[in-house]
Image 1: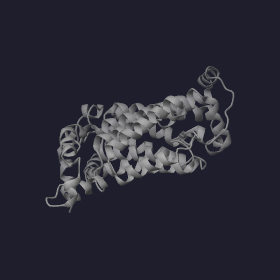
Image 2 (image 1 turned 120 degrees about the horizontal axis):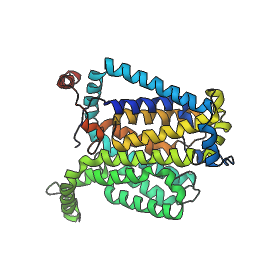
Image 3 (image 1 turned 90 degrees about the vertical axis):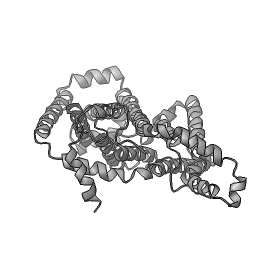
Length: 365
């Protein structure tokens, strides 16, 4: 279904990934949809915040020190390169899960839609607009995998109309990439589409006589099959753009909001650093991680880092709604399975040594 790219981490890819890991471990628990967990924000202008933070040795110092630590780790890693066979074996293991990618995507967006409908908000918990029947209906259709491509595009249209009316929905920008990915890949299996197509394709069945779309659906699937390999690229752009948007708009450009989160949860007691370092570090980490995903730099490691940040957030901020992160978890998990796909800088790096191919038959025994 997807072309697999097994690559050796380039220097740039390793630097960026380890830097993201360091930021995530240090300040990851403030990486959240801040508007979901606080009611107000401190009156801190952006220019004043940046001026104070970037001239404070207690903020700039740890960032620079962290960079030097990362550089040392990278140098040691490139010298030893201890995990090459592990990476190859992991990649082969992920190949066995490719068939579940459509199901994973459908679950990741169907469940949040159903939860939003019953929860009394529209897609984003920050938008209290009740559209229960619409969201629950679309969510269940995605879960069942019925008319999946049409439902995904219809849901995307609903989201885009909503963004025009309520720009707050940009907090859930992952819906664009995720729904486009579902429309591209289809329902997969298990799904109602798969079952009905099998019944309609069996000669002599009664259902075959009344199915109005079997032939056209098969023809459409054949025409779109060559483009299915671009699924990882679509997911990368959707997830990466979401990270950049959240890092910039919810932290660096709205420091008062992020500082309110730091104060509310007393995060400076968890890691005794300046509040400005929490905010600036979290924002830069999300922007760096989003950029790495869009460029396709060390994609699987970046996706794993994203999952780690989401997990830290859920444990550190108990008021942050879990459903708001399900789609993000799903998209990052998809990239763990598929890797970077086409149009990724990973593909310009050296490929894993041929001896790693021996890991596949050994792992399957």
